[in-house]
Length: 117
Length: 110
View: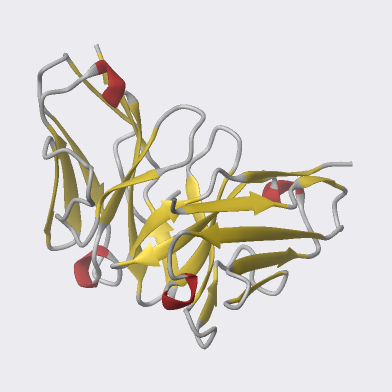
């Protein structure tokens, strides 16, 4: 079965750090670009970051640039998102999603990140 | 304010057809593929359309996509109550080097 499972979400104080992980299975993880997409409570989808299959191309949304770092381990079929200097506006459900044909085709169930004092 | 513009809501009766528009610019929709996603309440988004008009395996042909210039459209025919969801368009922006989503459209099947 093709699936992705996110973990690592939780409650963190403003200025704090959190590391999200995404475990992929059922497909050739190493062949595809991977992304993080977030959704603030009651709001729409926001693309956060993308990493190519070989890790050679990395992109970030302006809203997280310099604070978030995406990484992957193709040997472990895993994708991470290190989030530093967290702000209240980073509060959201974070989804990992694989990318094929310039679309996000497989999504995890999401992990909730709450930034609050 | 999203770079990609969608109507906040659309509605139609069961069995009818509805279209959802997504308007962008030359650096995004104009020069990149558009995809569409369905998000049922409390669930993760699901890919409906990729490369402007292609459907992944398992997506019924009631769902269709098209693109013209800097705009794209999602069409849904034979509306069912189970189609009530939020729908998002997505694409890449070559100038921003960033992914983009529309603001989302809430579909109500009356």
